[in-house]
Image (cartoon, rainbow over all chains, first blue to last red; front, side):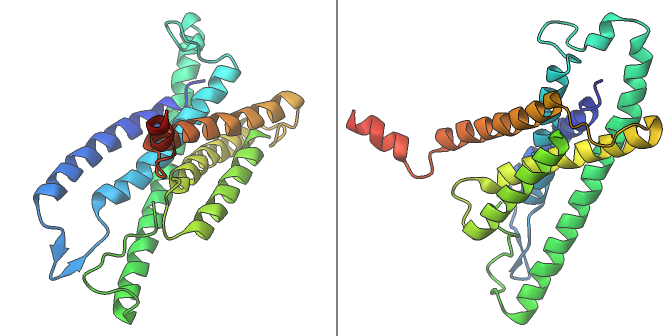
Length: 137
Length: 99
């Protein structure tokens, strides 16, 4: 009914964290012993794009099925008191599972990107000065 | 059905992004990640609903198919707006300058 609210909430928090980290990265040096690494703001941008993209498209699907509307209280389940516990249960189960799965997959992606970047530096595919920026995103 | 269509869109956009790499002038990385985010969320939703409630895993009605097509169109529309606003090839800038 409103399961997308949980990943949407995570997207809001992660976006705020990304903006804070971006500001601190601009102020401080990014190099560590002459080696640039994949920045945390870029890593978080991947998570945020997946979360926001999923949230927006799931919101569209909920709108299609009549589970959300443009007028308050926006969630149609809120209009019926009996449906509110069902909605909250769905958010707690389905919504949390979605958010956790996206976060776990993001962790796997950044682990792979980090391994590839270190391997590329070791084999000399990229120079120690240029960062392995994990693709064009 | 909307899960299948969104997954297909995610795969196609990822392939196009890879072919165009390393540059990402047209922000296909953002589009593909957005599709993957939605695909993963709907996959989790479908698996949990199937495990808890049973029934068909994929809904193959016309309404479900139309939803899938609409979701892809909606996502492409958002991407198009982002692309036109960023205008990486300065196409709009050139047109506006000429006029």
